Amino acid sequence: MSGHSKWHNIKLRKGKADAQRGQLFTKLSKEIIIAARAGLPDPEANFKLKIAVARARDANMPMDTIRRAIARASGEGRSDDFAEIRYEGYGPHGVAVIVEAVTDNRNRTASEMRYLFSRNGGNLGETGTVSWLFDERGVLTLPMAGVTEEELLEAAVTDGVIDVQIQGEAAEVLTEPRALSAVREHLERTLLGPKGLKVSEALVDLRPKTPLDVSAADAPEVLRLLDALEEHADVTRVYSNADIPDAVLEALA
Image (cartoon, rainbow, N blue to C red; front, side, top):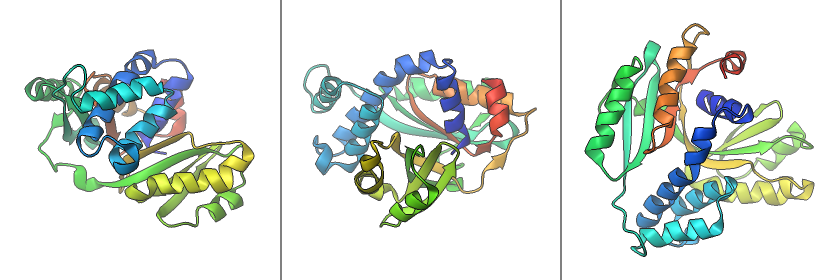
């Protein structure tokens, strides 16, 4: 799993991400609004919206809240002038960072991103500064309890699957982005469903082509920047190529 995803999951498990948890529905609602505005307000006819709704449901967002967000995208109720923006730069020790945000004030958010990078030992760059270091991938996270490696690998032989990564009690199935929903349905129908299991998380992610090893001594500085960015109200996703050992993440959480 990507380093920052592991860090986020460890903090959630240890109950140290309450502020992030409290902001989650707001951030997911923004993603739904942006996705709905980018195409039809029907998840079955709008791939981006389908993924956003699936993420919201995986986070236990009520369907009424999801419907309200879609309605707001079409001008019903309160009007929002949200825009989706990507920021790129470098963090401490040469770590590449990409930030995805949804904002109703581009100038304010850009200024605050620049401040957060600078304050935490990084530099905000121009568009394209580090994006070439990442690949876009669909990512399905699923439990391995009751699932053998052989069963998973056999089920994953289907169109759109790029790789399978098994780490202890969980596994990640990497897919072509547009194959994410189809692969999820396939795995839940043929492998997980009969065992009473389901995919834990499904999202389109940015994965570093070559992860950058970060030492235990340097990890706190890197994580300080990533946390500061993720806690910003306008930020929906933070990606980095930092590769920090699990034992170091556990110790710092």
